[in-house]
Length: 104
Image 1 (tube, helix red, strand yellow):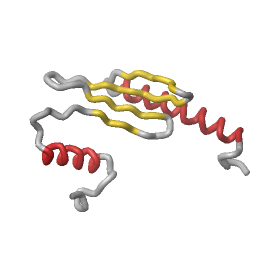
Image 2 (cartoon, rainbow, N blue to C red):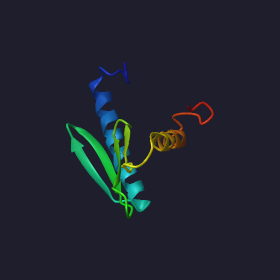
Image 3 (cartoon, rainbow, N blue to C red):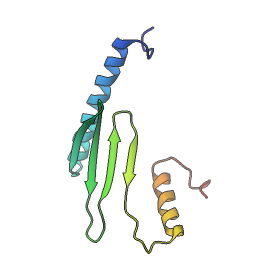
Image 4 (tube, rainbow, N blue to C red):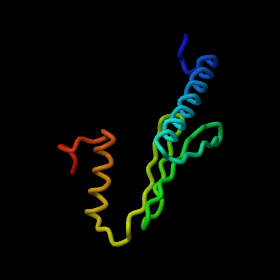
């Protein structure tokens, strides 16, 4: 049963492919001018980029080899809940996670 999760050879190939994928992503982010850090934690490889903007706290983007992407940004304390919501909706729309026409 090639490709079955219980197939250790296939699992090894998948892990190697994903590690290559994350390294390629690291190279692409670097080529785009972003500073990156590769890190391996508990056998999972990830890449982090931190964007610094004057007057703001850093924004971090973390991508792991499973394809999970985390976006961390600081919202000013005087931002209203509506402003924070609008920012989240715009980010999710840009990611294709929600359709702007169906967003709250």
